[in-house]
Amino acid sequence: MEALRTQGLTALRLILAFTLLSTTLHYAHNVIRVADYPQIEGIPVGVAAALVAIVYFVLTAIGLAGYRDYLRGRYWRALVFLMVFSLSGLASLGHFLTGVPQIPAFWFATIFTDGAAALLLWGFATWAAAKLNRVPTPAQAP
Image 1 (tube, rainbow, N blue to C red):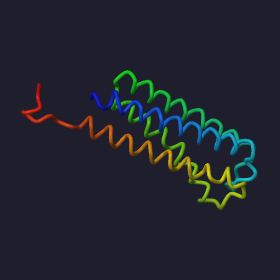
Image 2 (image 1 turned 90 degrees about the vertical axis):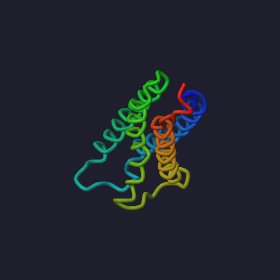
Image 3 (image 1 turned 30 degrees about the vertical axis):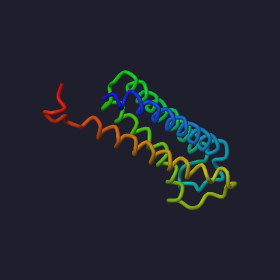
Image 4 (image 1 turned 120 degrees about the vertical axis):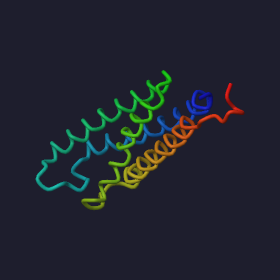
């Protein structure tokens, strides 16, 4: 558990900072320039922008709840919240299900940085779960 409190917390802070920067930039651009992204038939542009904003705030709140629980030592609960939060990055890759966005390169890159951030969260959660599942052998027991 000590590794979760020391190196785990540092890694989590770095990953969350990267994730929040990437998703905030991408989702803000997505809301402001929603018409530049491929549209889903039957969903008006204004509704799409509102849905993106709502999803951003809901998933970000879940991510912050995960961080709070991690700080409090509620690791399993924190990991669940963090995995749900990772959907904010994975959802960005969904743009390609309806076409290729016609946006400047910087904003296009944020689609991939969101995906990378999600993968980093998955890697962190896997590492932390492995630490939590570690059962001490009799020689290691206190």
